[in-house]
Image (cartoon, rainbow, N blue to C red; front, side):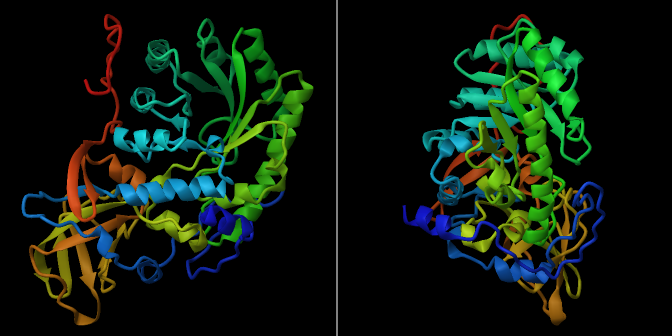
Length: 435
């Protein structure tokens, strides 16, 4: 309760400055940043995320590296802080499980009252259903055999409310005769899926078509993942501009005769923006946010979110120094097949080593520049890497070490890693994620 009281007294928008480079491009109406600002500099990231002895792994002689290390106490803390930001209402969090991946983590969330999820793959859907989810949205425009598989999983778990996204009537038709709910996907300016939010009449017509097809219209999905500006205030201005247009879309749908039950917004970077938007308060619909990265956190999310939120990294990659190829350079086994490089270089922060700057990785090698003529750690020394993008990093591993109070407690499967087998097995009544 003390945490909840503290957070509720905080300003809803905290303005922070950043030394990062910023490049913006705006489109009318209003502010719509679509070119991202660069990430906080490596130096400031290291200063912000100092070493903590609670991350140290003991008894590492039998541990092969690189290894994914998961810290359940920090996961629990991050879950608690997210619920506190939502004023104690766990029902308002529709967690995207592309980050969590582990059945162990999903069960932790369910035990703490998180029952609403969203996912992108059929394997993630299956894992969520097996781990006790009550409501799962497949937040991806599945078609063809993928859609058939979603139908199969929905039928396999009748106790779970499963929903799908649509952006046209053809997609609506593929769900006819099922019990699935349907959300209309809105293009917030990310330009990868959905109906452009300026086309409110088209959204209203599609919502009516869902009802006419005998399906349950659940609401609107709006992911503003393109808003990643380092300055939180700039990010909030752009997000709020989009949210105001979103409310106009909701009004158009309601005038067209369909009721909007739920509106989903906000990944991790725009979580503060959604919390500070007045239009979501006392609305006629349930407003749910869908940050997933906050469950584990990474260098990017921790540089974007206010420090006062109290998030902490809950997943690190344990590596060893394997070479000193030249003076001032050390290399560890943290290449891009372990620590994802999809968010650019540097790919990570070396915890406890502010003198080391990660350079461009290859598949299995991560060279590190040692500052000011430092020799760097010796060959064989352990390094703890905090990824810049934890979601895709977790997806690189089959297994994770579960660490509690410095000791390895168990080895947990990264249950929803990758995808299911690509060939539908129509003769099987049920297919388990363990297969």
